[in-house]
Length: 374
Image (cartoon, rainbow, N blue to C red; front, side):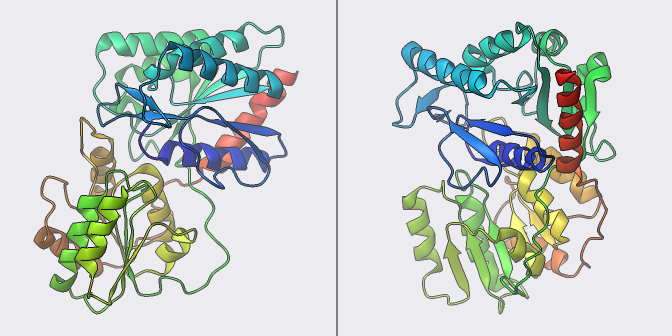
């Protein structure tokens, strides 16, 4: 709805399932992202929509216009056509019914179409470790009812020793017979090697839609740290507005040690080689940082009513995997102090959390496909 984190995780899962020898169709409903699907995955780009703001209540089309009933009919039909063309043994829906309530106009008809087939496919929900926002008991009851009515499995992409699903979905025990913890989902570490990012400080803002404050604070914090003689590479993200990117460029002007870019395809290589990472605390970014065993400072996004990144970052900080600065306390001095603490620590050990979620999820989906076919 806002960034590309959910799509990136879905694409990672799709590639892992394709690697099991299955035919995979990935239907994406947000703005197009070049190269997101990768080899072996058929991408269906639906008419794109996104949230108008951090309230997530209003959806707009690719022209910024609020979507109407006619748009919803077109989008629903495009999704049902993609479903019919694939005729799959397994249907995996990302997040719904634990989120995506705005998309019920298309997802409930899709679920009804799947459940009503003579050869009913297996149906699974793919959901991250932490749900956003506090849900009323009525909302939780409705969600559990949807799971019981439509879904065979709920794949929770988390390590329960870090945080259990019941932490943000108190009715988890009611659907426990359908829950599978898969471990955290992350792309396989790059084996290409290379020296990109060697000794650098990598400052990243995910997709960039809400990261300008962190990037500006990092530029101002650089001369306050013992790492001021290192190259600081700022990755602003493709969704950062141009006006904000230009303001950052002005702020960094004259400092040859600061490199400002939109994004890098070799982000995981940069993390593996870097002296230290500074980032927000989105799911994908933190998993890539932990996989790379990078020293890390996290500044969780907390705009609107978001609590997901803060909860995740706190649990990771408790395990010694990162230094934490809250968005409320973000300023150059606080960020510099956290960077100093992180830089003095050894690299995190491997195996600190379960990162095998992509492979394990693909195996579960493959077994569901066999069961559906039988």
